[in-house]
Image 1 (cartoon, rainbow, N blue to C red):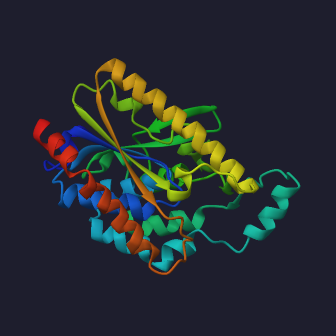
Image 2 (image 1 turned 90 degrees about the vertical axis):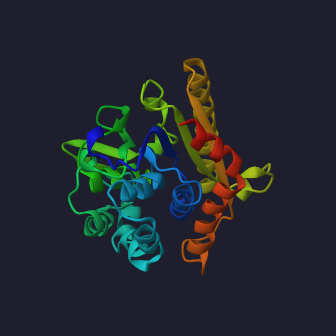
Image 3 (image 1 turned 45 degrees about the vertical axis):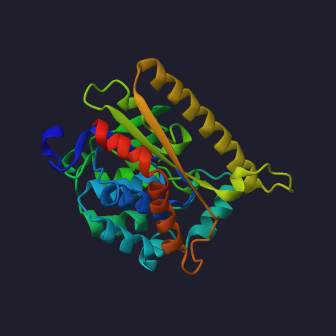
Amino acid sequence: MPDAISPLANRRLALTLASSKLGFNVHAGFLDGLLREAGLAPGHIGAASSGSYVGGLYAAGLSIEEIRVILSKKEMLHSFFEWKSFLRGLGMTFNLPFQTGLISGKKVLSHLKKKIGNLQIEDCQSANLSLSVTNLTTGSAQIIKKGPLAEFIVASCSVPVLLQPQNIAGNLYCDGAVTDSSPFHHFLDSQEIECILVHVVRHDDQETIHRGPLTIAKVFGHSHQIITDRFLDLTLECATLKGKKVIVLTSVVPRYRWLHPGAPAILFEAGRQTVRNNRNVLKEIAASI
């Protein structure tokens, strides 16, 4: 697999696109800035959840402009809506069998396949791709490096309750962010990789102490963020022990609804601005690898 990737990709640089709440456009903007402004093309990409969507499209060979168009069009949004969601919600309320998510994911998969076809992960040529998923059948966190790309992108994005677990070759998979929202631990033992760049997306209201009334969504959101931050800290400690250079860059963005006018462009630019704000750090990386 490594011999198949583009010679323009730097095999000594790995990029992790962390899980983020609908941070598709922010990741895309960051990747655009990394390629065009910093002149860094990662040879390896690890991704979870929305990061898998963007990282998967890029690794498949789509240009950033093509990815930006896909993310900004209503077709992508519509792929996450199904008329049966209301009925599934009722079934979930009563804990009925097989009612495990509001969205089946079939439309999401169909939309993706129109863009990347039946490409296999191991055949990606822009970068070596690895996707974080949670295997509910075996009860384990997994990093997927081989298999059907579109199917595993949807699996990595399958947030519990929102999307049903995806059945791939007899195994049920859900959101990679459940078990590994910033997947780079598998890069730590690589002799080829010298530097790992992790892009994290946070909302501006996560930067302050929460004192207002809580909703069930906020309880789940805050709890997941606490777990995510702790796991990231532990993995960074592990990287230090192994002597691996890891740099975390964070984009802090407003919390927009998906249909907010102009949101895709604003969020894309926020990701790109993160690259500009860290120009000196990225110059050092470019000079050292």
